[in-house]
Image: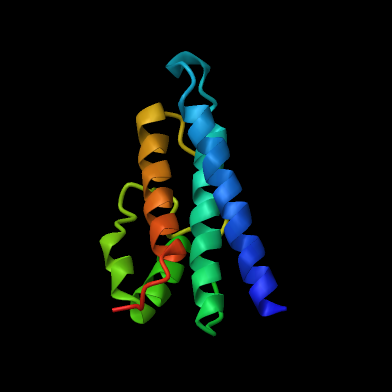
Length: 126
């Protein structure tokens, strides 16, 4: 059961990234930045939680992006390659803020893609 939940989190995160990527490819004046922001944030959270579940760990409360990343870093050094600094909401447990600038949400989407790459990689942790 735990594996199916983990797989579901990863599939949903992949879908969110695909949707955000499609949105970012639109003309800048047509881009819905809220969609990219929220999808990027949720995909990062999903990937980090899925990685923890896959490794038999539970997310520590309060659940924040920065806290989850710290937990993942303790299990796999590759997560040290991820820099959440551009993500203003990384310390928030609630998702009530979002960014409005295309450049900013593009950075968040890039971080989501980095998280995706590490989570999908099946090579051993280091």
